[in-house]
Image 1 (tube, helix red, strand yellow):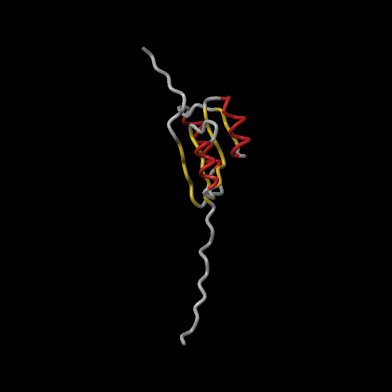
Image 2 (tube, rainbow, N blue to C red; image 1 turned 90 degrees about the vertical axis):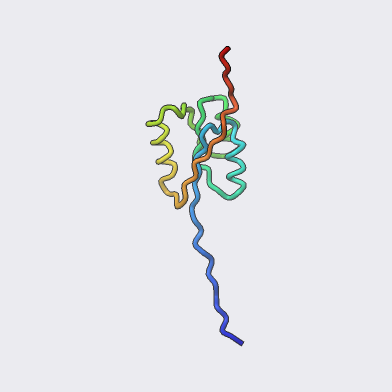
Length: 99
């Protein structure tokens, strides 16, 4: 019989996500259930704060993503300890139509 080789598990990576247009947190909740840490949700609608923070158990910031400077700083801060960075975003649920 041959010699047994002990295989070591690869190191666990710290995967951190930021969710743009997070709304109430549906995408973030799915990411969290997949084992990804969701550090931050960003949405322009302040009414999303309560369901996001209580459902996802993560930080929520009211900000319009078109404010690139502010959003960039928030994202970089949230990712500060990440081995792998995930930037998630779904189309916003709000829809404005001008006729």
